[in-house]
Image (cartoon, rainbow, N blue to C red; front, side, top):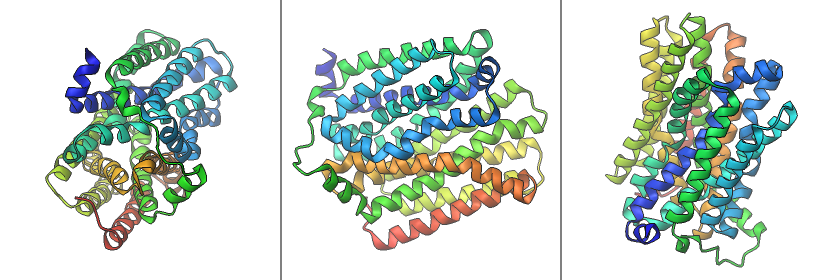
Length: 398
């Protein structure tokens, strides 16, 4: 019955796929609020904690394109289901582990499962929904990561206050398995046709990577992700220096992360209405520069700083939704949609991996958080330059 409904209402299936993305993001964001408990139980050093935080991005940095190609070959629906199964089993298995090394490996496995979910989902959306609604749904899809962050920063933090990190992992594993079962029913099997191309993997890789515009979109996404992840990641530390209590710092951080959803939704709406892609991307970068200068470069109170960072996250949200739209629009052909999204996602993962260390290095070199805007501003200016180049050299989609 649900399968029949999905065939009649493809937009409902697209909304469900966004929910699947949020579920996958929960597996990424469950670690930050649990890190203090893990450090206490396992005796993690600061360096080991850093590796644990970044290990989930390693798969994205190294395997984004490969996973996208695999999705094209084995079928988008099948790839997504396997990813959900990996996430559920890895999260469940971690509750039984007591070794730092094994937990680190499990975290890397979760990163691979995460990729297998979020790479085929946009291609599935493009395949299922009418062409004139793709831009609007991509705006909604761009919300999956900040939505997962909000749920974990609030709900996960509350659960950890009354239970252990292993219980949190078990709850997330159960939720992921439930979404896996729903996906079996709700995502139509007809959408799982495999690539009909007889081309070799090497040819598909070269086709994807020979596309200059695919590289440029990946760079645009990576430069944005470096800024946003660094600002969100360091907010608790900044608030701690301002003597703000842990629960209040968590609430403020969650509000900033969640506000990114607004920008993604607005981008989807404006893309649907025909607003120029370049205008959305440049607007996002320019406001991120100005907001970072106010938040970090000027000596302001916590309230003004919070408002500035909130604006940074909201308007910056125009960028990821637009990049996902460009990724599905700029794929060299229908068979390389997932591999194109994989390469763009790989750019995002590299930005998230290197963004925080870069900002930290600049802050340490120049002598304080008031210089953080120099690092984020430099990344934003690079992004603007690439957008202008892309706009001049490529025909942008409507």
